[in-house]
Length: 277
Image (cartoon, rainbow, N blue to C red; front, side, top):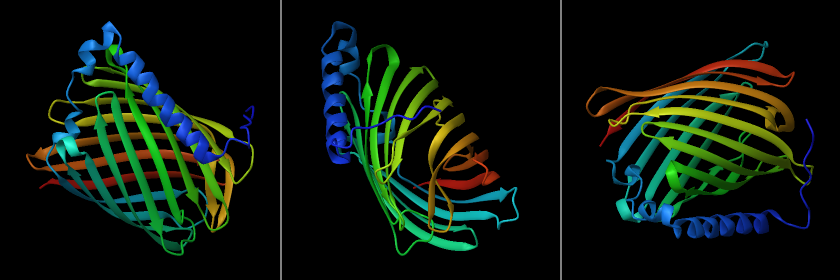
């Protein structure tokens, strides 16, 4: 795959400011057109007015090599604040490579008439394979006729290196269906940037049941062993669902297959309970 070179003079922070400024400017311009007049008067996404919930779950990955299998346990709390935003907090205990890391993270999303801005970060104390800390910003802009776009930038600090990840995506919402494509540029320290792609299709019912499929491929940073970070060719396919067997208790489920270059393949899944508070 052809490499993409990023101007080293334009630092990560400058690129982040440029992306977010461009996102807001483009959305403002498009919202001022007659075709977008109705869209600008629309209410904020329904997730900001939903009930708070608590989710607990477990994931497992079975590696095709002779390495120990992976697993994780997580707990997530989501607090919608209506016009004041959306706060999410998550803690996770992760076992990989025969080692265990713990991380805690949070994100805050705020709705604007022209889109949603999300700020997020995480921290892990003395990790062996997770990022020690991460920080990112994402802008989800609205476009006319059910289209939208995403601009994002994230920086992750590992023990051995630092990664910069930037993304540009487009999506189409048609009733209960959503289709999205995202291009992802990533680099390790000051290395040349590599390109990956992600394609998603999702069905979301009026009752918030969901079915989705995600396919990702390209070259991305991966921790291939303890404190060993490399840009490698990856392929990832996931099927996921959220359904509600009872009114206030939902079941989150997923199945995936991933390939990390010549290092390993993994088959995994997720099972969780989402409880409306």
